[in-house]
Length: 356
Image (cartoon, rainbow, N blue to C red; front, side):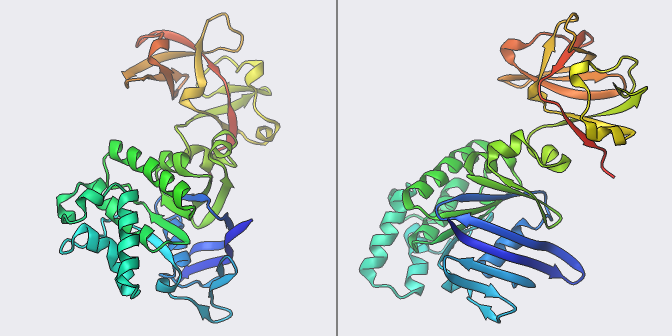
């Protein structure tokens, strides 16, 4: 059952439409990520939900509460929406202790001191900050500062947690650790999360569902697995995971990779939709291509032009005709050296028209 609803939400800045007729439903206790490149409208959407940005059109609901509606001249200010917010910047006050940072929004609400102490202590325990309660946030690492911001958001017992690129300033190891902490806190407290990020791995790891946006328009909403396995279009394929796009063309009704003189195997012929295209793309993921033998009828011949050891995987660059693509295999599966001929088996090919 939907808990957060955006109904025909549009936001314009002058002649620019930042978010175009967005309809969205998010369940109670769901972690929902908005993913896309800079300027796609995801942060603007989050700001409209939070109340920091006015809607041009549409409505925002949480439960049975209408929060924003220009048509009905209705607006609930951010401080009355009971949302917790965590931003990219470490929004902590260095002149206050960790404890006072977390307690501050409760004091603004004029709660009894006993309630402030209980909520603040509980939030500090949940974020592993109780021992640092009397310290200055300046003495904490980046991850520690972000935990303070999380604890402060938790202390108000939020209905919804809004997170805007909260981990992008952290180093990779700490970022991964904080992902799991956020997910654990959500399970413990049961709040809904709207999470804005341009980091696909963050979105995939945290989310129950992901919305991919481009230029203010929704491209796909689905589970992380379905978005990865069944991308709605070329943009989604290119944005989620590593990708290759290899130009392909027709010769006498048969598909050839551009620059080659041998047709693609019968099992690798394009979908019917590509018959209307003169040149189109064979889309593949580096981890979904295997080396095979020269006798494999499904093999496509190429030349290894680069080999890079990346720890658990080996990254190859393969030239086929005048095209290059990447192949990634586990380090134990490494099979070829630079300048060697190889044969590739495409496990899950996709076909797309070229970007116009």
